[in-house]
Length: 180
Image 1 (tube, rainbow, N blue to C red):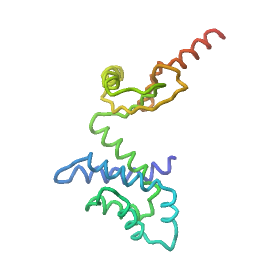
Image 2: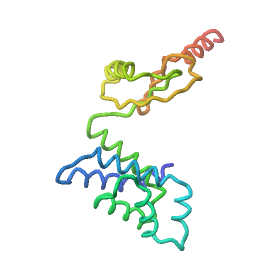
Image 3: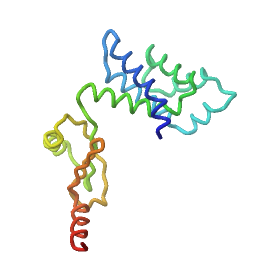
Image 4: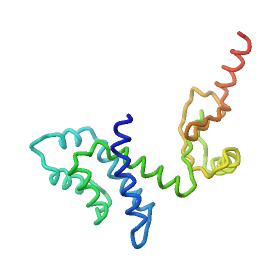
């Protein structure tokens, strides 16, 4: 949804800049607590509670603070208060996603999803990462998604680029060639 992305962008950029300006910038630590807060904020029951006019932003903050496994520090607490104070709890998952994109872009890395019909072990993934980084000409953060309908092979999605070497794709190509 474009509207959520538009609302989330200033929050993600401000958090990224604040994290970089910190005395000891640790973007991975910021990403970790932001991911946790985003996962909590994605809960529909929590969103319904936050939408209740009888519940204050401070009450929602205290609830999230109690649920979070990682204790909220000054930066994370202040950020969460700002998000809640502006009634943007629903946008928190999008903020986390955009923060990761900023972090990756400035680090010269890109997210890639490897879709496979079968599980890929760590050694295979490491070997595949080297090949894909050469193919796409950039550093990649790989994640794996299982899609049994691919039958075999893999499908790699990096942003808007797709490399499809799956059996399903080859069968579709053969079908198109035979019916043409």
